[in-house]
Length: 562
Image (cartoon, rainbow, N blue to C red; front, side, top):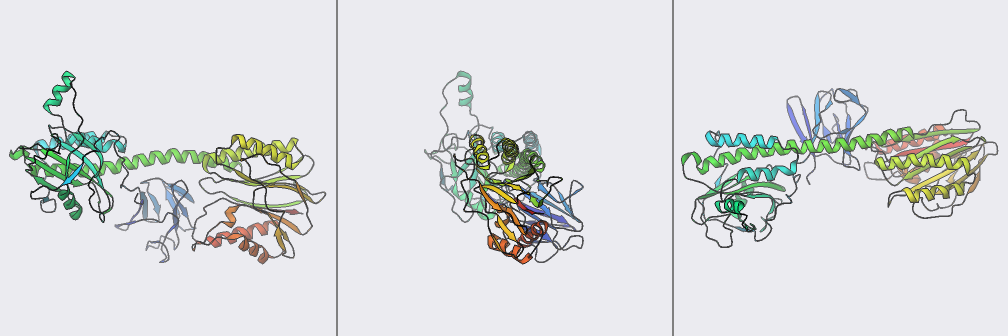
């Protein structure tokens, strides 16, 4: 499927770009991917990228005039299809691709004996015959088709309805074909998205009597006509076609009757494109001449393109609105789970950085004081996102706090949590978790690490090292025996627990931040408080990404003796 297009309108002109799904920077600077030469646009104004669900996100990069959606300034927002976004004096919108957006009609059964053949007749191109205004019966019929199409509410119904409208006469055939890219040859069996055969007198009588009507399985497609349309990108017509080919069903081409083949592109066919193909009889009266029919079909094709765009936008907006509502609910759940340093915390120094992505990732971080004065804390990561992740995180928070309140042994608490997650997590979903208890009166740390990244011990002399041995099994997969481990916290030591959103952050050169860079950042900062350590790492990750957006949750929790 072709990519969606970014349309920018302002100062009397419109520009279209194919945005990079990973990151597209918009601004005045020549270094930007999309350059807007205007003083009311900042040098690096905004970035657009796709989230894991395929939604386009626009994010302000600290611009002066900001991003306005529906008159309100936003820091970051999902871009709905066709929704205007204001940057200074310019308007931006994302337009979904029309290519291959409409799927094949399931009722189409014309799959056998489709052949391509050339007809020995002159091909008239739309480039050689300028369209004239519709009058008389053709004008009335066109208005009727417009009314029918305006009543449609879904894109899959468009092509079948068009075929029914255009092939309502006896022995007429209307179809919508899909051809591959122009560089490839016309296939012997074109992909038929929709098709309709006009009624005949025999069928009308059969319907009244209940007689059997044999199915129509084939009709002849002119390879010459298809080639003409592909080469010119315009409509083409062959008139007065006669054929007695026995391989062609009697409903498609009648042997001794004047007929016309009209083929019209439904948009750009330089890549994968759709064509309206008609094989119809005509009478030779001036008011029904093939040239008049040619103009009529071309007018209908333009209406099809407009209707298709409207239906696709409407459908895309409806789907995205429903999905955005789900993710908005997930975001509200996750916002309530944001870690808060307990009030009145005594004997423990704590600092936290918790930056979830817009689409709700799976990072979990929590701290709470126990009745005996100890501090319980947990950092984890669920291998899911969106509403399912938010529900898991919410239940994990309740489960952990409840379990720790009656189970003083961490390994038993982790086993209890794991048993619940095995039953509740969807198939293929797991969670890592570092669970700890700090006793400030004794200066000890008890912990269990279930598959999470090893925390880093920070000392004032800048000596750093991982805490503990390689991690145990993750949660939610199978029953596991966990071990509680202990560590004595020195006065000048701090513990940094983090998520893989830190180490997996990427630069514009596709380089990961990595564990070595994290250690280097902490060493470079020297002796520091917990808050300073967290701030140093968070800034280093942001600087490392440069203009790239944040693609994963980032969690940093630093703890030590105060």
